[in-house]
Image (cartoon, rainbow, N blue to C red; front, side, top):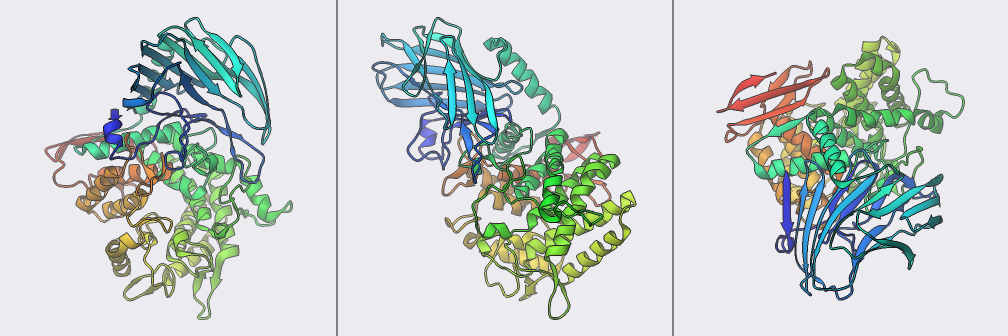
Length: 625
């Protein structure tokens, strides 16, 4: 789907540069087809080039900058009119920018999905006599750069490890490459040309051949899943969200974004669960499975954090950092978020859902159950307590950050632990492992369910709480541990809906409801079977999207566009309108489709492996396979 915006729309809708990438490279191109550095960025986002896993060995693990592209011509004016398009089916970005001197610069650009190449075709209509100068500002800290006149730059950067490689900047027209003013310049007299910026890729690259192979790679990925629905705004955002999750899928996992503004591309187990569910319910199994594979690769470090070098627990005990780099090192600044524990539940639940959707018993035994069991043992040993009345409760921790620190027996966290314990017990039973632990997990889950905090006829975010919270929906979504018609859960749901304008952002910012909270509510509504309400919410989200259908962490305040956590929840919400499953895996087709949707079709993932495809016409299924 090709999405086009311009300077007129950007005056009334939040604009952020178009996102390109392949999971290694992360590139943002603005409406000039370059990466101009704005004073305040676009919602903390600055156009530029970053690479997943390339970071410094500092406490925060900042991403290493691989520079940014600018252009200049003697006498070139300022932009006055522009149009930019993003095709989210193949990652091709086009721009047409007219400058005050009359010059028009047209660009077609893409980042190859399988090679670390940014390819750009540029056409310039101008009366200016001088050459076009493409300036590549590449001067990372703690680096040694060696360049020659061919456009090849050899780099060595002292980071988390010693990074060595090459960057090359070449054009298909006569040009002159040289170092200048803390960067490099490619000077091109021609008015039509292509150039390639390549990273650790010295093979030949011709624009049209690259474009063709890039489109074939995208087509292969897109064959795994599709939806066709009547709502154009929802489908627009859905397709952009799927696109951005794919280009954010690194060789390790999926961060909230491979951008400095997005916690420098660090990995949050809490957020990974939402992106995983968006992908796996879509049928993108390989991309989704990276997440538990990554966590399993770090399991020795996560266990050593708790058990030292002499493990005694037969199941294992493990805990992961709140914000981890690729080596399982904590990179977040110190704060009360260190006292979250529901990220451990999310490690377990991501692994469990990976088994449910793959049906791979051997994978469960070798990789997934070790994650599930060790995470649940940490929760059991460190965070399950008994209060003065002898009830099983979760001890003080940080629940959703808006609720503040040191909250006893919080509802959302408790629901996450119940879901994790029940998944662990079921997995152990399937494998015939650790029957004593399985029985204890089930006992504790039942005890926690019986002691969920409540008052005034509804579940409360924590005992005695007078605030309202999206976490009150947690029994339905994300965790599904309470029936949608549970009276206390029903009233908690209604309380959130009535007061969400007062608690609708993750932080104490703004007065509206952020996009991923709206999606959260939409999934819960879909699970309650209220498709009309769910679609209203999703269309409200679509109205809060950026010019390319990109999601923000908080649109109202313009914070963090291209935010994968929200994208994952949005995708899952749309998928659950179309397809849900009973606990035994029985499919429910169109369980929350609004009455006005008479014709729609989809190919989505199903538990046990494989995909389900359906085509509805006049509200009735004509094809199900």
